[in-house]
Image (cartoon, rainbow, N blue to C red; front, top):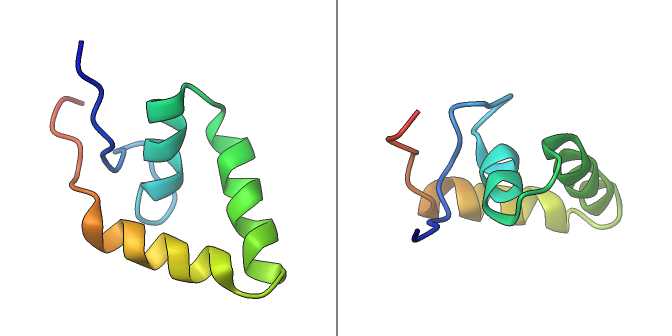
Length: 62
């Protein structure tokens, strides 16, 4: 089975965190918390989130 990094339809804003969590088989809440921490420690989380939101395609299998 080929895994592809896609935005999830299990989303809060853009589906990026849930998509990353599904790809690595992690809990989406932990990924969202990591992005929030990165946001407050210099804004890297916001920039990374926006780039991934633009680059990652939407999941089509759900």
